Length: 334
Image (cartoon, rainbow, N blue to C red; front, side, top):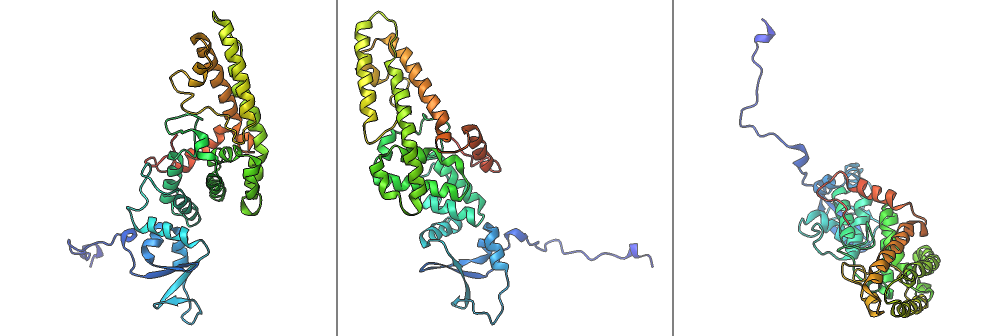
């Protein structure tokens, strides 16, 4: 008999076909971090994280001494319970950690950033990076629609904790493009304010910020000093007086505890800078000096990564784009 003539058994037309990557096991995993325990679905966790998938898949001997709760194995994580909680909520609650620009607490974002990197949850990692970018911690230029006055953010102890927390997280997840701005914000502080952070894990960051303070002094002199340049005009006497006033302001700013060389958004918008009009300069001088002010600030901005021992902006921008390249719906933006 010709085997080609034998009918091949076929599945009934209505037989359902299992979709393997959407077929979750009913196994339960207990996760413990410090003194908090979490009972979650192992199949969903494994689908989100390759690291957890391997951890869960590793067989445990029946007579092993592995810790169990309610008869289920306990996976111990040596991360902070606070970070683990926000990380798991972000995985299992789709409405918890919404994409930017939806507001979300900064320290919770940093916790998700660290653990999504550590446990390889790519979509959460990108989302956390995008939150930090849209909150202004990654910048293409020193000015822009999301830029606020710098010193309102920087000059208090709590903001130094924020700066150093972002620096630590960026180093941990290898995101160097996030480093220039928090380093800059930290460097605007005086040595007296940085002193309490010179011990413990923040010590290297505080020392780098302190070393950069001298660069900020030079930047302030260059940027503010551009406003003292004499321009030939029809109101030379009045504009010369304004130039002398600007020179006094340069030295006053240099002597202040908080040093912020970069012009704020208000000073650098389309309108004439209040700083210049208050000095009584003529419109011709104002337009010329605004250009020089911008050029001096741009030069300082271009030098900013090198002040902190980082790669040039061009390389940092390329790294940021590469980190988000696989998901155009969630890309790093200015």
